[in-house]
Length: 280
Image 1 (cartoon, rainbow, N blue to C red):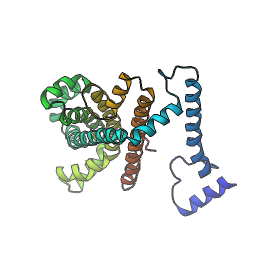
Image 2: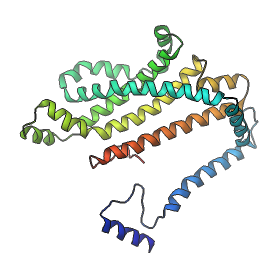
Image 3: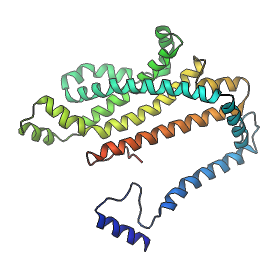
Image 4: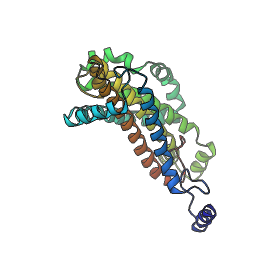
């Protein structure tokens, strides 16, 4: 009955149901399921820790204690802040370079053919393989890590932008030209808005790559950051601190993706469309 009333009110209001809505599903059920999932995960984590040495596998209680200690002495906040600064800086630069480049490559056949060998060659080189070169060019400071994150972000954004341009129906461009739009108007008023879902998808994937890259870079060459924190804890067999760093990385990445998803839904609502990756 509740589902029928909800569906009826939705039809009367003329508003589409919210993302993930199912007939008969209450808001409480949608909130309870993720909480239950996390609870089951922690229970399994605790169960496994009973049969493994704490030196090799930290328990939830051991990890919580290490979290409190690192929070109180300020090491967690300082390391997390250092990593986030590098991630956001490199990621933003990657977007600023990758989005225009991808849109131009998708719109210009000649430019795409000219730069395609470089794009498809460089995108297969892992960012961590360039770490020695980055250190040689930028030193062991922030520059080398920001360079690697930028490198890891650009090509994902470029490829998604190209895919977005390819997905635009040709008739859409023809209609714009028949209405008197010039090439510049078609690009900014047709091509760019139509590729927004693909650009948001590329930005989300690039954010995931940025987190992966920064941890690897900080483990090898850094004096701060979550990767450095995990690597240093390993040297002193501080398993709880290691797990704390791992969990904080996952949590920050999750929150960053949720924020991008939220902003993406607001942006895409202007165009009456949705995220091609299924923003949730």
